Image (cartoon, rainbow, N blue to C red; front, side, top):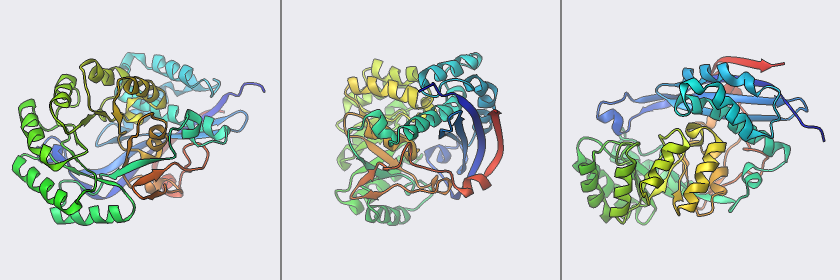
Length: 373
């Protein structure tokens, strides 16, 4: 069979409003405004032989237009290349945008195309992406985050947690890290009592300094948490490593990091916690898999951040049992839904990622550009 070539790449800049604004600790400490929308960069690839693939990246609060603009500048490098050569294409795109570095917006823009190429490859093989990569399992433990934000009262969070568990979701995560740390502890205690032995996580969204983090981790030990997430600044690898070796409750971090070297700083610092790489942020599936291999070698547990439509497949291919984060926010953009029951999220049996773009996604598209012919 002759080698296929990328014929066209279409980029779409999509703005998806949230039904209701949400606030985490970064809002309550005055660092950010409530989140009202998610901005996405979608990529659709078509080859000369008629194969197709779809991928996406995203941003919250800022960066969406920058991702779209950056990929517009470099994407023509991919036209005419063999879509099977995903790592080669990834490197060529990074070199095309080398003057702005190999992290941040640059990697997040390229991520959308990288994911699309993996989707295409799996579709062409008529396999779910997890199977193409080599799955260790057909389902992953799932927990919900979207019901646990800080603008909600304890009673509202209890109601949403109950609904999540009744829908088949296995764990619940709530936000902490507000200025009144005693109120954090009251909310955690109330939810632990409400949840019984349901797996329970908390997320401080980087809002503690090292001293406060140590005190809070010590106080939180009593609640038998699955993990304490982002107690420190995301780039404080040494601080996170120290906490991970000091407490019985696992520490989790990594969602904000945008390159493999940034993640590797955790391992180099002696981190013993849970890693939370985000494929759209780290640069796509290519760098995600590079880091996942290193994380597995270091014996670290995995719980990818957000974007369950991508991360379910990647988590299913991780050697040790992971967690996948449930957010329903992106549901309007796709025609299909993921099966969730008995605390597990099941890998779709459809080829590729297993999703097609909805008419609603087209309606929410602010601008689009096609490259190639």
